[in-house]
Structure formats: structure tokens, C-alpha cells
Image (cartoon, rainbow, N blue to C red; front, side, top):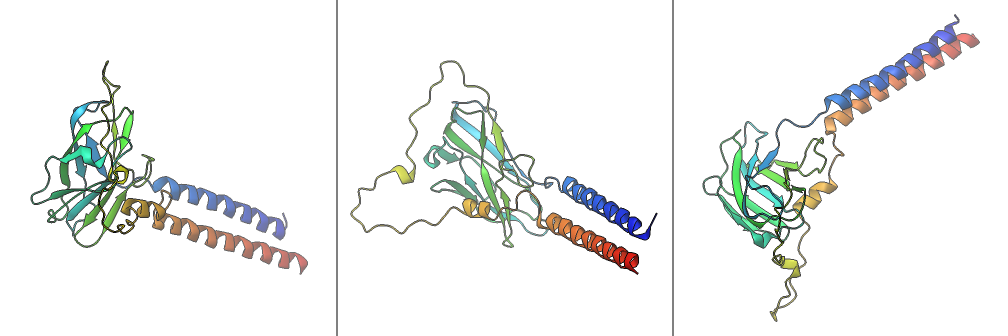
Length: 238
């Protein structure tokens, strides 16, 4: 076999190795170990006065969780949610699209557990609660992906079918649906949702390290293949 043929064979093998390495990186870049869990004993469509519990797992051994920001799923208005219980000193605040529970930082490395009571669950099969989890060092975990196999999946509550005869109550208007009767000047335009801003910065399900690793492998291996091909052509023309 000629030297040029050997070079081309080597280049093909390098290309195959690149693909195999990239695939391995993708497969090992699985979901993060920590996440937010949600559960309820009355997880049934159209159920009323339902207590929903959340367990926000910590991803830091040096900082404590100070707050949880949640965007409610369609069918649940912020006004229909009340605070249950949570870490000592934490308070509940309704937002335009959900709510925030926050207060003194829990112990570093500890989970933040809390609950809310929903006036009535919507007629749905599942409910996703997009969540931003903040720490006292400024870190924010973004549990907002609707793909459960992603790195940062939003907590999802699976619902049983509605009980026979169950009906949907009239939903409570959200702040944006309520017409103000005040003669005060036009209020300032509200800022965009923190969760919406976080979604625009989403990395497509892979961590930055995974993409960097893939890029490095491709650049090095392809560069080596080009070098070998040029070297083989030079040898053949000599």
C-alpha cells in the first residue's frame, strides 16, 4: 500500500474517532444530580384546596439557598396560591406570573423544603413549575427545561384524571387581567420575567463544559487529519 493510501486511511480513522469521542461526551453529559422535586397527595385534575410540596435540592456545599422563584403553569393564577410552610423566616410574595418564597439562607448544602396551597388544579395531565433557585453567594440554579431528560428540568407534577362530576371554578383574574380604576399616572412597564430571561440564556441542554470538550476534540482531530493528508500528498509528489 502506498504512503498516500496509508495517510488517507489514517485520516478516515481519525474522523471516526472524532465522531465516537463526541458521542461519548454527549452521552456522559447527563442530567445534573440535583433538581427540584414536587409532589402532592391530591395530585388530581380539578381537585380543590390542594397542598403542593416542593423540595429544592442544594447544588452548593458552601452557600445556602435564600429564595425560590416559580412561574406557575397555565390554569393556576398567582392569586389562587397561598403559602403553606417553609424554612424559618421565609415569606411568600405573589408575582405577575407566579410567586417567590425567600428569607434567611438555609444551612449550606441543605435542601429548601416548602409548600403552597392551590385553590384548584386545572384540568391537565401534568403541571410544570419553572423554578429559579438562588443562594447567598449570588448563584442561581435554573430549573426551567420542559424536557425531563435535560440538564435543568422543571419540576413536573403528574395529575390523575378529574373525578366524575368535577367542574372547573371560575379562575381568579391575574394582575394583568384586572382593569385598574385608579386615576393615577400610567405605571412603569414591568420588567421581563427572570425565568423568561433565563430561558433566553439556555444552553440547549448541554453544559458549557460539554460543548467546549466537543469543540476541542473536533478541532484537534480534524487538524491532525488535515496535516496527515497534506504530508501524504507531499510525499507522493516527491
